[in-house]
Figure 1 (tube, rainbow over the protein chains, first blue to last red):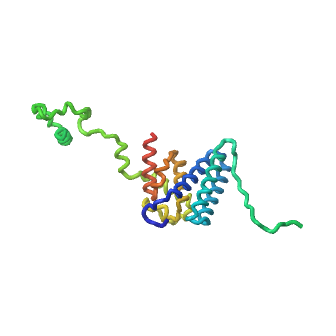
Figure 2: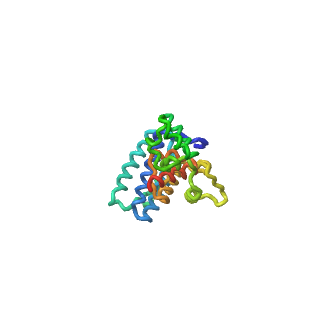
Figure 3: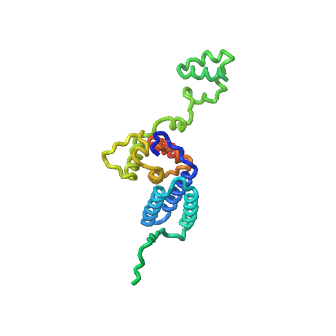
Length: 96
Length: 135
């Protein structure tokens, strides 16, 4: 996206950005420390996906957007107080 | 109608025309609604605001927020024409910047406006427009 004029964003890119915006707006409604946690998590997730996921992999991107929308709906509900994520890595089992 | 508007332009420069106009039947200034204040037609000021550049303090505030969001070093120069991509921001950063501006100025940027913002001047202009519409 190094064009000097405004780059035309594809429909999918616009969806992703709208989703990101939705998350940031929802984060505002939570408590301040939760808000910063949500923002950090969401931005990390989005950036990771943007670098790792192939641009042409429309199916996976659509899946991620759908999943994101569901998560956003859950986040928007007033009962939800926070967002957390787990990183599960496949490692050697530490069983003795 | 063309004759009325042409005459109106003339009347701005010299008020002594009405003396002559009363005698001639083709020029009927009395029927024109603009006559309540002699002189300038009072167009709504918001129409002019959009064409003018944004105020300096708005641009400065925008620069501050951009600097903070992108964590730019203090010596990096920002002019109103700098685009966000020049500063190394991708589209996600742009969304964050716009959100930060929304909070700072207490406005809400609509979805379709968000995609048009590519440089600092445009952001400041949009902010001015929204602040003016709000008040």
